[in-house]
Amino acid sequence: MSDRLMLLDTASLYFRAFYGVPDKVKADDGTSVNAVRGLLDMIAKLVATYEPTRLVACWDDDWRPAWRVALIPTYKAHRVVETAEAAPDTEEVPAALTAQIPLIRETLESLGIPVVGAADHEADDVIGTLAARAEGPADIVTGDRDLFQLVDDARGIRVIYTARGMSNLEVIDDAAVRSRYGIDADQYADFAALRGDPSDGLPGVAGIGEKSAAALLAACGDLDGIRSAAAEGTAGTPAQRAKILAAADYLDVAPTVVRVARDLDLPAVDDRIAVDDRRAAAAAALADRWNLGSSVTRAVAALRG
Image (tube, rainbow, N blue to C red; front, side, top):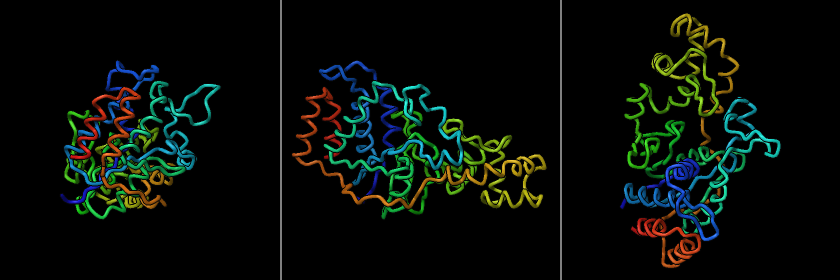
């Protein structure tokens, strides 16, 4: 089997599991375990389907880094809990999910799946760095289209896109990005900055949508080229040029916010999939204690595959 790395956008997956798996089965103490069970079932399917030899659970050590907010204050602002008791920049997460997150980490570690995060950075930045480091092909599992910017056929970097659910996984390669948006994958970050993204609180350039952003990138290559051509009066329509020039302050900072890091100083981890009898027994003990049932059995079987 050829060496293949799989990078999990872990929070993206456990949120999907929490909302997608009915909260019918609980631990003996009443703790909900639907997100844990759902995530394990996702991992079992992903590993069985795409056959990685290495696996990393990438973690949001900081879901809304202050340095991104300083550049664009609206960044993810709509997800912040607004109560007197909440600490600044506390993400709005259901209490039943918050209670499961430590167990998710413990379960992943029992299976030998390293959990990797970075201070002041999001899981996207960890994924970007590990993908840049990868010596062979890598699959990025996420429901976040921002990570399309990492797709690179020449290096075998693709996205396993979960937005339509685990029964409708999409493999996003260069051709898929071009088919969806009319741009190359390495233009996606500039495209997102221009278009904006309400789900991340990115305003974009007023009046520039997907089609006009793609047309401008096709004509000028990248955001710097678009801005230079707008200043020279050669990009797009007069109205588009005016909008781009008016958004100068936003466009000065948006690329830094949108582009994922690729050079973080991350610790070395053993990411080889290797569930021996000791790990299988530890996972089974967790399953018994927390009523994780066949979800652990399926994950262990896939990982030992």
